[in-house]
Amino acid sequence: MPETLLEVQNLKKVYEAATGNVEAIGDISFRMKAGELVCIVGPSGCGKTTLLKCIAGLLRPTAGSVELDGQAVTNPPESMALVFQEYGRSLYPWLTVRGNVELPLKHKRMSRADRDRLVDDALKAVGLDHADKSYPWRLSGGMQQRVAIARAVAYQPEVLIMDEPFAAVDAQTRADLEDLVRTLHRERGMSILFVTHDIDESVYLGERVVVLSKSPTWVQEDLAIDLPPARDQITTRAMPRFTELRTHVYEQIQRAKRGEAVRPGAVA
Ligand code: ADP
Image (cartoon, rainbow, N blue to C red; front, side, top):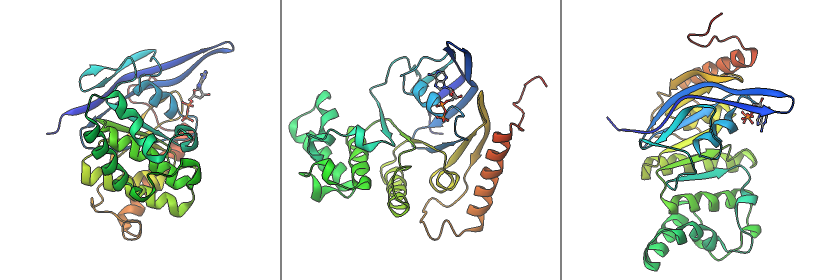
């Protein structure tokens, strides 16, 4: 049995605002094993960003804990990489594609040759080996997001966290980028935690889909996605099982929005 890589235990976050306290996260617990691709999905405002900030060590939870490899996360862990929706703001315009991908590796102790090898390999993995000397602002949105992904691949994180990464690109580009994520997971065994509000995307990508309730958030369902691991946009999405799973998640989200689902152990 693969070991637990990430463990979120009874996480609670209450924001203290001038207008009163806001309980954003009620009680979230889930685990992720090394090599898994887990999607988190929930209605907007349900606390996805708050959860990710706590996991990434950027925000201190009010109660509960986050552990990566058995170590409590209290600051941003070095072995974590993040890819956000806003690729334009995550890349340095004065650096070339290669310069952007290489930058985090400069903080790691390694020879120049090893660094070059990792950058070449990552650029190839995302299909940008021909564009290494370009500047990001000359590239399309989808290609810029590939640069951000290449940077994460080259860094060789223990876990890659992706926060709504494809929400700002067109549908065809989005499909291509989803397939890139599946390929990185399957061929490189990358552990990926992927947050999205897109139900179809969560079912297409995930081996598990963690459905969040509305705020104050808890895990409404942790659903195993029993689709074959070799997925493609046409065959997989046409499968009756895909339709069943997406319908199921959709219904769960509707229940979450209506606040119908009852938290286990909650006093009625
Ligand atoms: P999501 O990413 O799912 O849209 P968020 O984590 O951004 O959800 O927000 C969850 C809840 O916490 C919302 O009710 C939001 O208004 C509230 N919230 C988020 N950030 C703050 C903050 N800094 N201060 C007060 N309330 C906040």
